Length: 117
Image 1 (cartoon, rainbow, N blue to C red):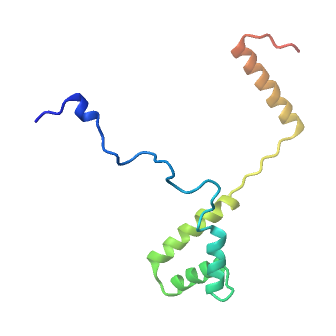
Image 2 (image 1 turned 90 degrees about the vertical axis):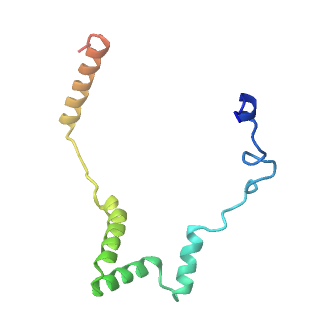
């Protein structure tokens, strides 16, 4: 049996927005990062999450679990390297002026405006 164009467009009542559905406006998430970290600290008798992470890393290393150790390395490096890999560039006043002049000249060429010296 072939579907006609009107039959294909008719859909059931499933899906889509419904009045009153979803979490009420202004309500808070039931699980928060702060709550999870506080719960970890409570359950581990005062140890914070970072201390547990390092202890688990050391246990994996001491147990020669290379697969788990690699996962810890990736986890730690992904979090730490962003803060360690900062490059600070400082220019002298002459370098800044030279860059300003070069930028002004390039902009003048693009726009066809004569550079007033």
